[in-house]
Image (tube, rainbow, N blue to C red; front, side):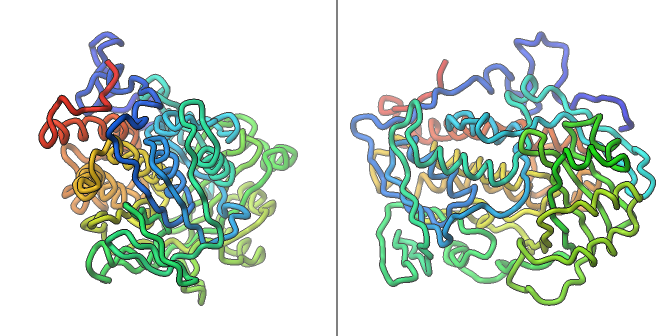
Length: 477
């Protein structure tokens, strides 16, 4: 690939810009044409569903936003106090940002940083090995690629879900300190205090350790969160602090819109990128997992600065100087399931987000898939005429999402520069050529428009089962 700027395959062509085709064969201007946010507002004869969502993380909030946008009554059950969203920073590719725009999400309030390229360099020598220039994502994929502080994104999702929007007056209700102990496939949510609530649909969004997945899949096999053998030190450093130190200034004063990937040997890798409008730098230092204990914790494990600096001794001295400035240092044990789930839905229950498809961070698409899940649910449960349709509508979600999220789980298990390692497993989920390099992954990750794909799937379902005269929502011409 080299250091040259390169347009992803499928993004260029001899056709005029107005007729440019995407890698999926669709005309770009038509496929990414904005969809009115009130397209799914209920109409006479539509059923308003009572929907319960288990978990108020990114997936749960995205689903809440989308489902109230379609007119449903949404109640979220969150076991925590919601004091803050743990974590550091998170990527939102254009595939997710297009959905956020449809949600009438306030991007400015969430203070993102645009991403323009990926820089790979040797973590021991600082020698640059490749520079992957992203295309103008807004032009190529209908929206910019944005980097967020996780707390900022989560806070704005919560606000969007619980406050009226320009085209959506309805809001979701979030119940804090409301732990769910069990669910039934017929729509019953059992709370830890013994109360039972009955819902038309239950959306399970409570993460990789969810207890509901076995109900949907029908077995407890392959559902455990298994350590992968890698652990990461997570930390943030104010950009200003890095610019003041002559040892670290050169790493941050030129390139302010990059994800930086610095391998230091076979099994050590430092990754960082800006967030919070560029005011903070988010770091992850990935090393072999030799930590004892904390079997039930994956994300927020206490970390020792002394042990951290010892593990960072193989890095270039300037990168060690960066590590010395680590704030709020935590360990993150990378866990995954042994393989993707075969199904995401059963009866009145649907799995989304990490409860459905936990991913390692190497594609930066875990949060994006959660946003896509929520957006798809909002479309596929819209303009429903009878509650008897619910299982069929959830099956549409299965049909739309299962290969997409399963492929992303497999792709996310290795770096974008290690595609050959997972090619055989990935083939069962991908139609067409497999991605071979970062540019290919960008095309695969960013191209799909989940809302338009869901609308078109729903229109086909209605035409086959209801008849064209009864369509409510249709794509804008």
